[in-house]
Each structure stands twice: as C-alpha cells, then as structure tokens.
Length: 265
Image 1 (cartoon, rainbow, N blue to C red):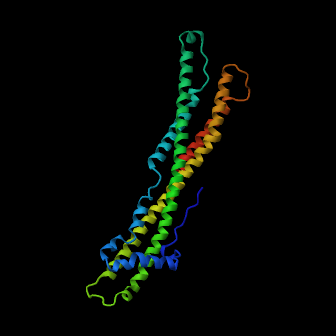
Image 2: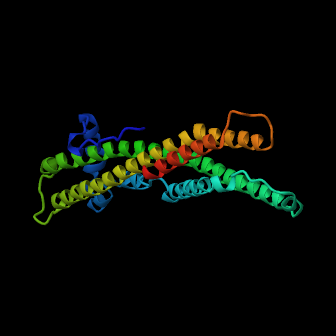
Image 3: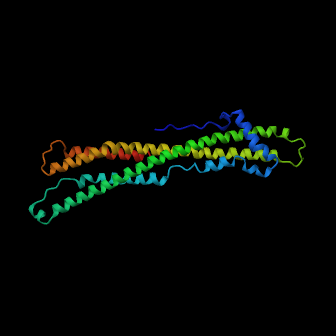
C-alpha cells in the first residue's frame, strides 16, 4: 500500500535564492507601479491547485461496497439454493425437478453478474486511485511553488522601502502585501487539509481493493470450482474429491474475506 506522505511545513521547504529573486523581479517589483494587481499575486498557483484537489469519487467506492454486500448476501443463501434435492416420480412428472434446476441456474447467473460488476468497479477504482495520486503529486509540486511565492513576498515586505525613495504617507502597499501573504498561507493550509483527505481516500480505497483482489483471484475461483464439481457429483459423474462440507467451507471463507473488505473500507 502507498505510504502516507507527510507534507513539509511551508517555512521549511527549501527555496533557491535565484528563484526568489526571479519572483521579486517579475511578480513583485511591477506591482509598485500597478498595485491594483496585488490581488492577482500567485493567483495562477491558487487556480491550478483548486482543480487538483478532487479526491476519489465516493459514489464509486459506495457502489463497490454495495455490490460486495450483495455478493455476501447471495453467498449466504447458497447453502439453501445449492442444497441437493431428490425428487420422486410424481414430483418429476410435475416438473418440480426442472423448476428447482432453473432456480439454481438463475441463482448462479445472478451471482456471476454481481461478481462481474465488482470486477469492473474494482478496475475503475484502481484507475481512479492512480489519477488521484497523479493529482496529488502535481498539487504538492504547486505547493512548493506557493512556498516560494510566500517566502519571496515576506522578504520583499522588508525590502520594499529600499525601492521607494519618497513613500507617500497614505501608501498602504506594505499592509496590503502583508494581508496577501497571510491569505496565501491560510489558503494553503486549507489546501493541505484537502491533500491529506486525498491520501486517506486513496488508502481506504487501496485497502478495499486489496481485500477484494484476494477474493477475486483466489477465493471466488476456488468456490466456483467447488460448485461445479459438486454439481457433477450430484449428476452421478464420478468425482469423489468435493463434498458438501468442502463447498460450505470455501463459501464461508469467501464470505469472511468479503466482509473484511467492507470492515476496512
């Protein structure tokens, strides 16, 4: 499972002197002649981060959990649905044996539909996890850029008087820049919470997939094999290897595995 990434505090992110100087020259110094654009300082980073903070679609994990719960419900009914039955001549003449077999076929068909849906949903969820992780990586890169813009702004706040020979008494650029820096810090703190939530969502989804994959790759095929062998045995095809007890055991093991996937969601 992917490790949880601890975000480095903004004031501890390394900032290259030349990069800070570039921000001051290209973004901050021009504001002295056009202070109305101060509100747009680092705006490109704000906008870029905002579109990356969407986590994994909760409807997808919710639907997958519902399907798993339905599979568990169907499996729990298998002992009744697949229990061997014998029919006397009258019952066979009435077609009860055929009705029973049709019900069994429909039961297995419905279960296969749910298993296939779970497989498709798990594949979609895996793709969503990868996309979410890619967005997270991009957002953390923009976070490092934001740290540089905040640091450059803080340094420029102290250097600003050196750029103005005759500062007007009503000039409030320093106050406005200080507020802007505080706004950027507050906004990034909020984004950091969203980034942490993205990671939590990824880990919970991975845990769900891990449990489901165990069932899909090992336990479901084993149970389906036992069902098939048990049916052959009931049809008087020689196959002494699978008993009803073994079928129940493989079913119970599968149910427990699927329940664990929901418990770890």
